[in-house]
Length: 257
Ligand code: NAD
Image 1 (cartoon, rainbow, N blue to C red):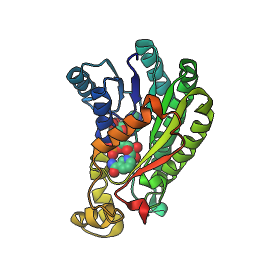
Image 2 (cartoon, protein in one colour):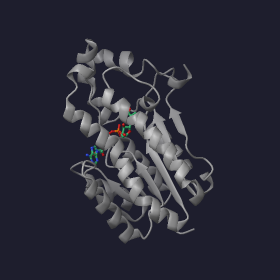
Image 3 (cartoon, helix red, strand yellow):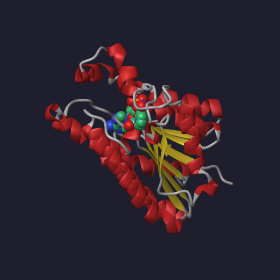
Image 4 (cartoon, helix red, strand yellow):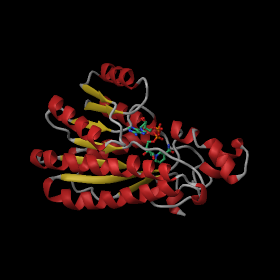
């Protein structure tokens, strides 16, 4: 089998970076993306460690043209992009009445619209290649709501809808599409919420992890990033064509209640 190539948005931090490591270990070429200052070095370091091809793009998910340019650069370098992982995302925590309009717009664009733009750009080349795997990193908040996360919950519910439609349209062409719905994972995105959650819930910062983050999970532990990487590899597998249109929780039992 020829070496497969994966494009992972937001892969220079947190979950995306962990997924990139898992795919590099499995010998995929990686197209990295993310806004971290040291993104280029991080990407080169992983590619070097696992001896795989790579490209780093700082395309901003708020700018659809930059996303399309990233696809063009990836196709030029690797000829085909076999797996697309829409992972980039941001969060903002505030009651609806105080929720800034511009934060709403940004969250919808970065967490949802960017996935639509990249899926739209890649469906034709994947169809021509008779193979495609699209994985959307949604959230337990794609299935459930929490107060003070209106934009995030709306975007994550939305991406589950996009996942199902992509699965139906991709089905005749060996293109599957699935969503991963993690509970809480200890990343900079979660760390950055601690102060705002404390303020919105009127509790101390030390109470946020047990009372807000892990409260809804039966297993009172953060979800390991490595587990998400393993699930993403399974969804990207040659034999996973009939595994499609799903929203798979890895949420410490949150969705069992
Ligand atoms: P993170 O902050 O560690 O990483 C987010 C990544 O997205 C970074 O690489 C960042 O540069 C990139 N990004 C942000 N804005 C961007 C933009 N405008 N253009 C391009 N890239 C941009 O966060 P994370 O926790 O690893 O989150 C990754 C995904 O997982 C998100 O979609 C998030 O909603 C989802 N998720 C996270 C958790 C959690 O508990 N951490 C739980 C469920 C789902």
